[in-house]
Length: 223
Image 1: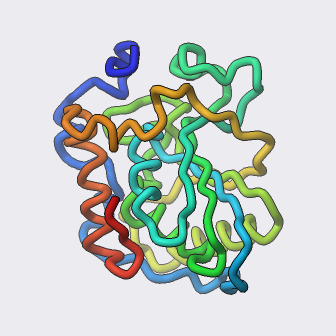
Image 2 (image 1 turned 120 degrees about the vertical axis):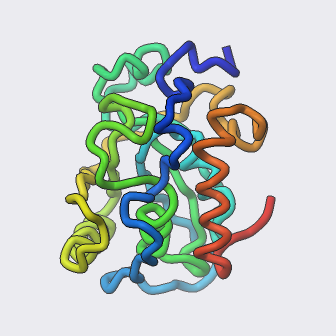
């Protein structure tokens, strides 16, 4: 049912959930802007980005507050269509990652800037097949690129961060081609906005949005 996540570990509130599920492993250091990025383009266009980094509720919530983002949809990527169902994905053996498709205006924000937010406040890219209290390959850190340009920007930014030794542990984010994106069930959409008092949202996802507002005041928009 909508509020339970079917007792999935995404609602297991452990001490890890009370510490932050964001990129807190790097302390309070501010990440640099990507050196390699796409240029801003003229208005009237839209582009898409698909990323994964833990429970999709929090990733969606962050990017719904980013200026230039037209929509953010929770869903599944990395597996087949016939298994893109929460009951199956939550077992961690379908190949899917809980993901978010971002539709954005490239005249207002670049792909690299979206990744800047992703690595800064949306998740911890050093956690392998988990994110805070959520454990399993469905919670892996991944960038599903839709073009050679996206692949180049993503790989270059990860290399840039690794060279700068921003994080105390290696970045484990996968950069893989997007085969397909499957929207999640309706009750997963806008979950953080609709359930702000849910303990999981309060402890894990609200702090991400707060950090977005603090670290990216030029990008943050209230809802």
